[in-house]
Length: 135
Image 1 (cartoon, rainbow, N blue to C red):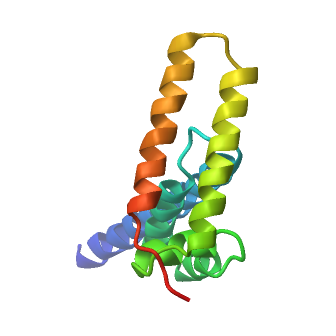
Image 2: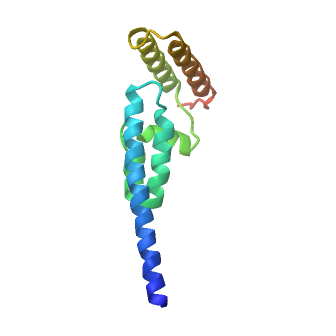
Image 3: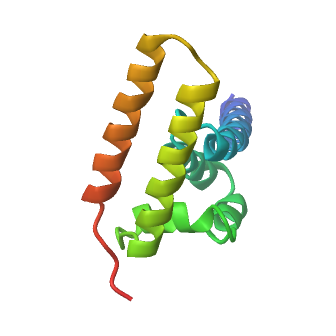
């Protein structure tokens, strides 16, 4: 009976591991989409993906943390090291360009334009409140 219970626990742990791994992959995909869609916050999805990878595959988490594009998003938050002035500038520039393009070309609805503006203001405040990394 003990061996049967132990094998059920191992199977349950393997299922959880694969669910976390699958979730991490999906969250990474949503984070990638968030790079080009201004209403999807890239960083939070990458942080959630990292959490899932920590519970399922340390190798996948290290890949994400060391990725040449995504790694900085993760490391700056997890290490609480902040963003450089250049990173803040380019993030805000990209945010506002994409929001304005979206508001001007993709919708005629005033409430959507207002929502996009509110999102942009909120993200701008958040980015400005992040500690500035000195180089």
